[in-house]
Image (cartoon, rainbow over all chains, first blue to last red; front, side):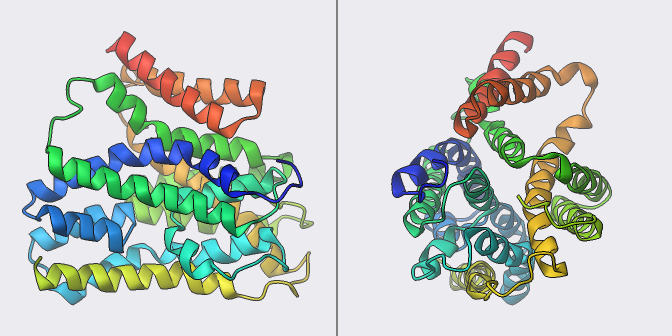
Length: 234
Length: 107
């Protein structure tokens, strides 16, 4: 797809690993939500309206523990603050003349994985296209909602008889991130990636996954700024 | 559906959408290519993806070494297939397959 405008078909193709990874995670969310006392409609509403995995799992705990609604809502929103950075990074890579007419729609689906897949496609030479973003994002969204419905409907234990399948599906997203990292890696980015990795390990080990992600992104960005020259582009 | 659950979903969803949408409207066309903000944005992409990968595998790395065969097999499969095919989708699916096979064989 080098130098070609990324099409809707490219978006569907790029979404395949995300779809396969999202369904079992969303399934787990559906199971956990209904087990914790949410109705199927409430679980699906969280997936349809929020569409943010980690925040949704936290929502189950907050709702089940009776935290006031406003406190819970803004705690969940705070978990997604890192998404503020994704738009500028993506649009910078897309170029100044990139269309944004439908950004109000496809940006709703700009999760970690969709951002990573889009950035990887641009880093490999594809030209930004809103059809690509729409197909990629809404495929992921459909998989997430479908997985939630299936999990809430089927209940726990549906994949218990096939632990290898469950394990393989669980590894889909780490495998996607690693493949994306390999696809955009060059020698100048190694210090950025190492700094991000070390800071993430420290953040996750001594804090939480969210803290680890913030720490990793901040450390990598800091090293990128301090590196001489500016050819560390993704 | 309970009103407080709907309220939580609507507020969290609206804030999350705002975080994702409004920054895409930023005018980045006039950024100096070697400027501080350009370097920051260029580094943030790889840093974010590295952080996401590491955050996913760090909990597994804290388990006993003997249980990490599937993680090693999956990771190796991703790297090998990427090196041979330069396909993100192929490398990802091979990584998951490698992980699942190793889990089935090693238990």
